[in-house]
Length: 119
Image (cartoon, rainbow, N blue to C red):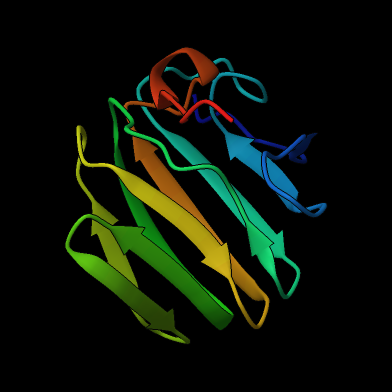
């Protein structure tokens, strides 16, 4: 039988400003380890520490601009655009103008597998 996910769980975000992460499917909200799906809302000027995750992350921008920095440079992902960050790649996310976006991680996001840069 299908499983209804009645509401997301709000998760604390890393970064210099408060950011909303509402996990709909994943380790915290549904006990799902194979994938996580979250709705993110980030304020203008938000930036998080760099990371080298063990998961692929697929992101679709709904509003604003998501900046994805890597060793290859910066990519500004705009409304209606998407980006794929591959497992093992160093990346840092920021929202210079603020952004609303959906993030899908395979396997699901875990603090133990994100490997954030030390401060």
